[in-house]
Image (cartoon, rainbow over all chains, first blue to last red):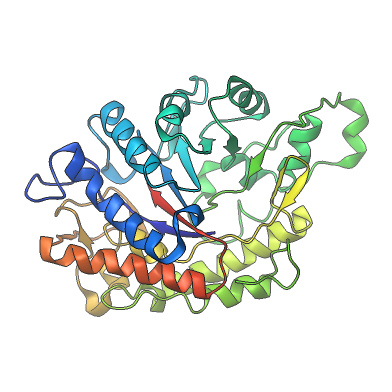
Length: 207
Length: 152
């Protein structure tokens, strides 16, 4: 899966000076223009989109994500994309409050109508819960995947996770990327493994 | 990219896909030390994950999904959140508006405060959209399974 980053249509950094600024329709235009260009190469079934409605990283942000993103989800629905990957508002760039419940996937999934990947602050229980509620089709893990090279196995067996060190994110080098240990198999008998057969794990973007 | 064995990410195959990824025209971040270092790290990371997960990053419904993945065009993400040292001819990075992003750029010498961008002109947008189309074309030629637009 190749990833093309499209960071353009947030409210804050865009002047209302042309067809790509101001209104929701205008601010969504660049994303849709780019997607249509990419779809012309791949066909829509091979193109997915990842959105972070409440992302504020880098000083960017949308002033009305509860209006902008339903519009975007409907526009994407008409294109029949492979999937829509949604970052929950409890994660805003490099700040997160994983104690908050997920809301975005449940709001946007009916509007999009296709497969939805929920992301942001999920552990095994939260992932199972959103799948059971039918608000997402898949769940993505990022931070936990960085800290747990054997994450799928840990989730499957309900093993404890290594804590991640955010200070090592995005800074190059191996530290924080290649030095977290896998779970010691000798400890498995101490823990109660629980089935999590419905859990889907998506590697997603690591960077 | 075609991994040597279906369902596996090998270091070599990631290196092969990452090396030719280059965004033409004004965006040439791939020629920079940043992306050289970044590519090398991604290759190492991919190899690490390959080894630690037995080649599969993901399983879904008991069926191992292929883990051919990874980025081809972070250069575009670097446009508004970049540094003049990473831009062709030391030009300012472009952005929707001339507002400095609150980010650090990773230079060969280490993290640095991002540079003040210039606002893109309306007339430049069709060319920018076409850069995405060409990047998507390269991803296809390189053998990826699909493309994800990340509107971060």
